[in-house]
Length: 486
Ligand code: NAD
Image (cartoon, rainbow, N blue to C red; front, side, top):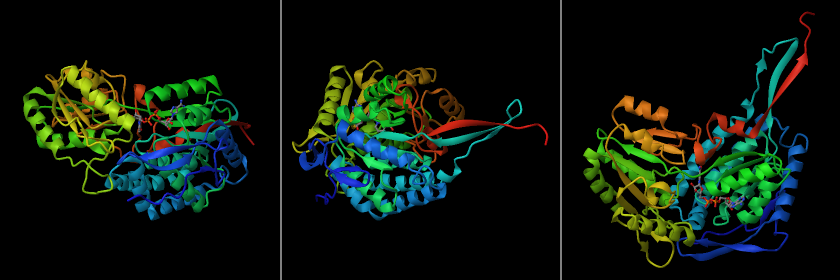
């Protein structure tokens, strides 16, 4: 059933406004491929207004930046309370606009509410150091909010990304302009209204839906934006760094893609590893940045593992994301569905063995049968490029010596996992694998209390964990002349 659509305009300075150009764009439901509604399409003129509002809110005395930290904490907890109150509606809307199964949407919302409370509690623990400096000076540091931050969101987990970035920036005392992904703008607008209801002052959070090439690019080039926190593709991440370099050297944090290796050693429990490996790659239709999309299985268990992996994939129930008994919904868009089907064709052409799935289901909506490829080799496209779809690629691994070389043979470095009962192998893997998140005998991992982010092309900076607020803070060293004696 179609959820009630309450907000379709831009949210600037706590007001709902049309785009200056009057333009709108459509958002579709991936379940049927039909139009849900039209949404105001922001561009440079609207980004300029939103940045002005955020700048004014940042500089206005005692409204946000100078508000007692305990009050920022209280208001962020109030925002979390409101998300909790409206969690059912938010999950339904996320599921409708994005195609995420309703259970997964609810699970993500619950976990993000916990993160919000954790992060809110960091707001009044931002503290500097006293420094034993040489000379007759008393030296200390102040940690202060960076300023106006542009938060650019992907489509694959819209509520999670909104909540994570906004809460962290606000806990630090920054003000923000959020640019949701054009494929999934609706939940960000509902969250904007909850920001207002929570009592967070006008201008602290502004939300401008629009295209990446217009609204997104204007934000990244804006001289009054001090920082961009971006989640999305490597390609756009590089454009954002370039824009920062061409303008005011704004700070940039990037959460980008992955081609994460999961290694199953001969001594692992096969049944357990099969289950985790399937969840690791098929969850959320494979549209997960930490998807275990390169699965290396050691040779003596390879045949048994492959057989069981196929059985596991066949158990996945694909269908309407509003039905909680289904596991997998549609891909987010026709373009993404075609891209994933294209990778499946390339996998077949390059000689990988497709053992199950891989076809489009029906002609309505963007559904794909979960696919399992065996006999994948390191040089094949499906072993190198991020697919972002329900495709498991199984590669054979012979010796222990191959593990690190093959795991690290990628430009990405987001997540990595190993299943083994040998603690020494696990410890060596954790130490030497080039990835920001490492899992041993489990997959995936993403506790909100732990830092999350990548090495190499997978990004810069970390979200979540105690360190997350630091990404949004400047450190100031203060030195005061101090005579040695009275
Ligand atoms: P995308 O890079 O195409 O788009 C992401 C956002 O950037 C959208 O809001 C888009 O409008 C905006 N954008 C596009 N062009 C822009 C430009 N020139 N300037 C500024 N903004 C611009 O990525 P996507 O398709 O939305 O998401 C899929 C990708 O995101 C995958 O590669 C996935 O791995 C990655 N991802 C990473 C994480 C993580 O935490 N590391 C999480 C989710 C998704």
